[in-house]
Length: 443
Length: 189
Image (cartoon, rainbow over all chains, first blue to last red; front, side, top):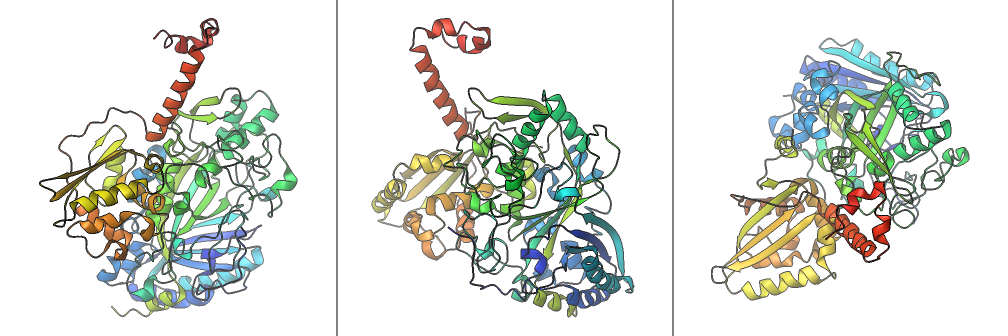
């Protein structure tokens, strides 16, 4: 079945471009967080930002996106009846959901980088572009919108940029998998994955259960909006390299182990298609590097371990507890910080990692489900209950990882945490009409 | 923090936990004269796609009892499962129904009093909320299994294989290898 679609039935000119478009590659980007100290200034901010926010129908290569936290909607003076119509997780915010998300210990909100996780985070602006010139042109407009406005405070920002060879900090090619969304005209990256109902990602359309998810009220506010999860994830690259080295007997074995943990070789080539050795040509080929399923070719995970990162995040057609298509997300990662130089095994103290962005219509059924059931448990694929994602799981030195292989499986013990949550928040990315509605509030 | 405490920040749901198992117990009123057809329809719904145990296993159901009592006026529905009610509710509907309410085999709920509209006309969310409204939390719930349904299935699979090994007399010699001591310890009976 092909994921390429021609029929466009979504209101693409109303849906923010950053919601449905895969991020460019290569890329530069920036995330900016603002606090609204005066609701009238907040509305003026939105009025000024709207021209910088492109609809999905736009052909712009660089685009800005704007999203609001629950506290941000409150600060804008959105009526209480409307605030109450937002789902509970969004109202509570990410910090309140920490235990459920596995953000404990070093990743717990009390250790987050301020102001992440505080009620001060109201507006998020992101700009993504294939080049610095495009970034600057959009960013200049966005900056002008808030820097000249009293009653709005810039409280945090994060610069992102593609790392050498388009890899993330652990050294893997990133940003490969993207689902097709019915009616968007934007093809997915897996020709074997049927397009998803638009309501899985955009509010106001039927979802995979055949229903239109209740939207925030009034309809003009909810329609064509999406929920956005933003997380700043610190990557312990030296610890990852040390673990690979300590657990392997040769550089080749290290690379195979890294691939087993991830489910792909560092080139992006999936174990599902080249289980024994890397194939950089395949990894670099967007037509082939995501063209696979698991059920028929690899039900036991002899190629791609069921507990590996990519098979957890997207089990495709694997036999699992539950229905995988209800838990698909649009995921967008952008790197921050410098690459740890090749071969270095000692931590240099630098902040580096991934700005993780989720896009979807259901925080609980999608992002929170994946975090609690797939990332931080193992029972969904009949793995041991306590086993977690080896790359991003809330591991604490007691976790294990099973590599199915014949004649007997290999089980690694004592996985440490390679990723630490530095903070994050839940946002709502309204459609452009909704942004205009918010800007025109008179409460 | 246990998953119970963790989910306390979500909508508060009833249902006791024992190990990894959770219980759902619901009491329903049966429409007068509908009891016989109710039981027939439940049975038809459970068997319409072959062995219901396969679907149950996919959504982590250990067992389900449907008890008609009080002179055919009431139904007790008691289910235990290894997943969280809210977390996997939509999955359960999708697996049992293919996402199509007409295909759930859930029309037997129309024999019960108080359903806010015909089964087919309800949204999944309304249906879930109605099920929860009929729920009575057990006073005591005990489940002896430490494993999820999938782990139990795997354990049974391994046990079957181990017994096949023991059926071969040469297994005695093979199991004396030090690496196989934990298996040898289980092999005498």
